[in-house]
Image 1 (spheres, rainbow, N blue to C red):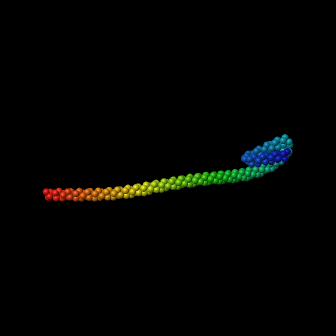
Image 2 (image 1 turned 90 degrees about the horizontal axis):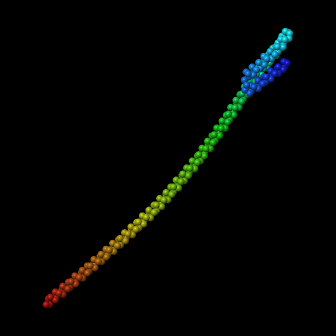
Image 3 (image 1 turned 180 degrees about the vertical axis):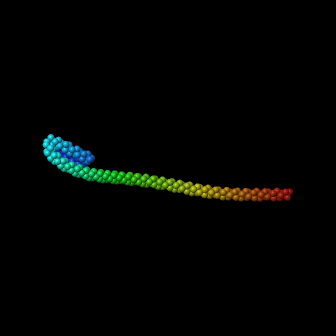
Length: 216
């Protein structure tokens, strides 16, 4: 019967250790063990009181010794359970901290990698836009240069033609002036000749009239 109670108490201590490992307070487990010991003591003392005083004294001593042994075993089991629970808690906390640190590191690495990728993509887009803008500017400058060159060529051609036309007009005007001067000179010469001839004729006629007058 004592052995059964001892086994039962040891079972309770094992349960207390298990409860401690799962997070149940060791004080509660110890309290339950002490309550069980007191109940066992009361149960053991009741039958012995009904027997003789000698048997009662003997039984009381044996029960006291058994209770001391059980209390010691329960205390050791409680301490062992407490130590195991503390170690388990520390191990679980360390594991949890390590896992959290690993997750944070992984998340940070992933975020950094994503940010770097986005930055690289933005830089590539900006480079592409700049290249396109530069190409358009170069094309516009080339078109402007071509238009300016064409306009300059047209202006040069027009100026050359105008100069040529002016030279030609000047030459024609000079030629016309020379011809007019020649014609004027010729007309003057003809007029002079005609005047001289008329004067000569008039003089001859005057002489003839004078001779006729003398003869009379």
